[in-house]
View: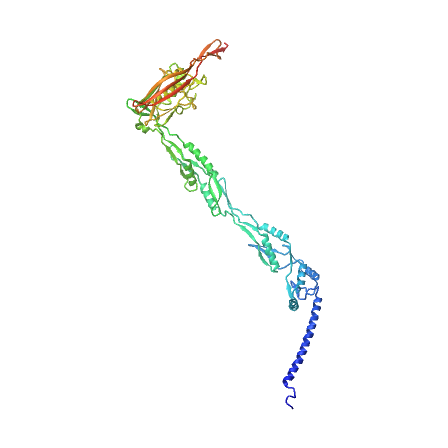
Length: 602
């Protein structure tokens, strides 16, 4: 054989491959054509049906129309049972079914979801999913319907078993009995949050336990044991209030009174917490302590003396006595402190008040000689007027006026009444006279005015009478009227020495004398006047009917005096040199004769 005339082995293999390739290509073309024809047929076959392999809760829905799948789902899952579900709170638990909380399987929506599987996506993804579902199956979750109203009602009924209000611990006192109300933590079921957890568990197709969502509110006052212990101490036994005075017995603040004063209140702390504070009602305590203070209160009593001009010594005729008062605020402080302790005795802070003039001060008072005196006459007075003068003058015998102090006639005179020993006698009232207890006291005030005048002591308050009175003349314009408590006579001891007043009433002679004892300062007093001006003549007699006098009887009860303005000057000299010239002015109204005419029939 000639070289190159016969096919080689390579060529024969090549031709065989080419023939096989052609066959394969033809076969592939045929297969593609078959598949291309089969896909539309397949899709056309399931155009209104669920693709094979789709299932819900183990129920195969493949090949069913949506309405058929819906009907099948409703038959198989009405009602929907699901997995066992339990609500739990603490040691308590409650079984819950989907129906309890308004959960049901939505068959129509679930069927629509099953029908949608493998559709409405790119072709190759859709074909791939359809092939996979046909071979391996494809399960989809069900679609649920939720009735939140049913769940809310169910959980609200359950919440009534759980919910409770927050309560602070409380402390109360009933008489002497202490009542404690324990604290309580508030609880409230969060219905919305619990419902959400239940829905999530059902949608996830898992059962088991679900913790009830409960919000707890702690009490602001969880415990009152400290306050209770304090109350027990406070009312456990009486509190003794000791004034430490020989003439005063201790007071006992008993348990019932303490209990009545107790105040238990809530106090917010800086950190926001609340604490019970126990104490005493300060208003009630003050009223209680102030009543004790009134019983303790005692004014100091100055010593009154009698001066012996021969020996120059002072003898007490009224002994001095220390006064005392209670420091109410300090007493309240210590009661507040001690009532909360086991120490049940409070020493009351009683303050001792020393008298201005004490018995032991006698040698140091500077009372050693007569410095001034005055005498007035009441001769011819009625017996009642004379006794009133004697009684009023005695009120001032032995009185000591410290340096700088102002003497008040009314202060030392005291009460003027029949009960105080005064008799009725004539006094000037307005433009007339009338009978009243104490008539004649102005004789005493006039006398002390004159003693103060001649002693050179500053006259602080002095009032002349409205009309001239014969008892106080001569001279005219040298009187001083008083009418307690409104009209007073006052002078000041302006020397560095104490001033002793002594009085003497001579009932036989009808005179009253005031003597001032102290230390002479070298001053002397002279009078200029009286200067009378603007005389106003008195009017005609006045006749008044008097049914107490027999008819035809006429009795004169007032004697006429002219009105007049009177000025007196006091000239004060110190070691012979004039240091002060003072004016004392008096204006007297005219005074008519007054006659009583009897009208009484015999």
